[in-house]
Image (tube, rainbow over all chains, first blue to last red; front, top):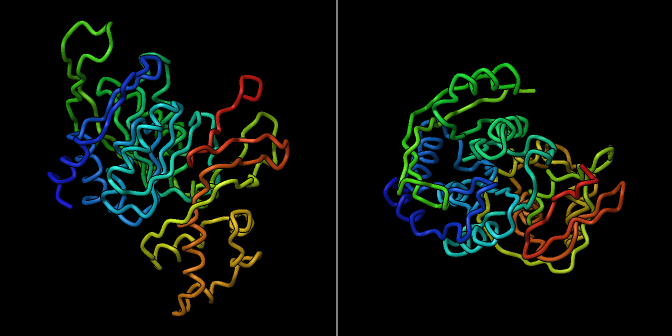
Length: 208
Length: 125
């Protein structure tokens, strides 16, 4: 599948109808999502024929991208039932198989090393402090190949240190810096649109 | 929810040490065909918890998997009969309605429209 085609398909997905500010629900736009997963597969071979988990999947954009790039199995995890309903509809629309699990991923200990790759656009930690780190820690516990994640560029040094020192990462690389454009989703947003510098990270867990 | 997912879920209630595997109460099971990928299945065989899978498949109405994990030789052989059974159990059986039950506490995690709800209550964390 070509990048443009992937981006097009992801652009048709339904997004949050009533985003919950406390969960930091922001859609992962098709531009970022397509590039993230395309790079994961084309540069690293981490998606096709692999078991891919999407932590904080929301409406399932990253999960859908993984499925479209022929992951062997895709599982999306999220705490919010409404998002999971939308994600289910999106998977049906695209005619891809995705399993969804409702849970608090920071409290769910997944057994074994069945998951190859974790992809995620986790909360940045602006509402619940440290949420970004909790997601990263959980992801590195679960994956056997790689974790792809988006974090604010302003947290770069902090993330690198925590991943390598505390979360069992063998490597932590910023693959590229992206502009994440957030449309005015919530009433407290003053500007019509804002764009935030985010890093696309690739982490490798240490093998146990 | 498919059994590949079930194979990684356990009960994380505070204090529970034997929360895996979750027993399945199946009310509605559907089957959906997906492409057969023998290399992927061989790779998976080494990683999955076999007994949990065999028991779970039985709960879903599929009793073709042996209780004990077969030899590596069976997996490596050119005969794909066994791999097709593994394929069916792991990837083609969907639990749509029912529950996942903690083997230690009996706590039920409901499954609705294929989605298990693993959220814990305040006092379980």
